[in-house]
Image 1: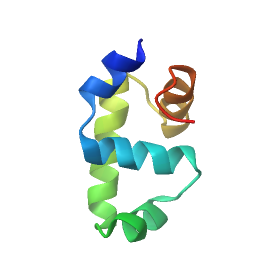
Image 2 (image 1 turned 90 degrees about the vertical axis):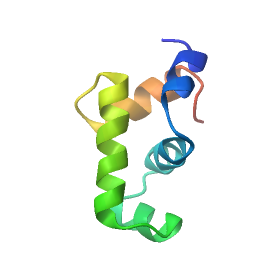
Image 3 (image 1 turned 30 degrees about the vertical axis):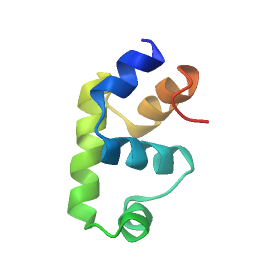
Image 4 (image 1 turned 45 degrees about the vertical axis):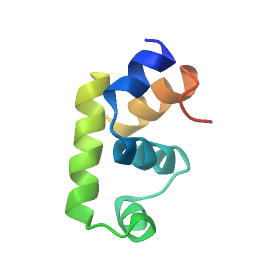
Length: 71
């Protein structure tokens, strides 16, 4: 998948969550950082996984790194 294709499918908030996942943040840490609930973080993570067609958050991070979407 190209970077453009991956990023076009993500909302701005999902991209923020993905970048924090790539930095190793846990769900509670992401929630605190973005001032949202843990439940909302879980929803964003689930949406990211669905949009990337993967089952685990690490797979989403690897795909995002390989495509250049995140560092």
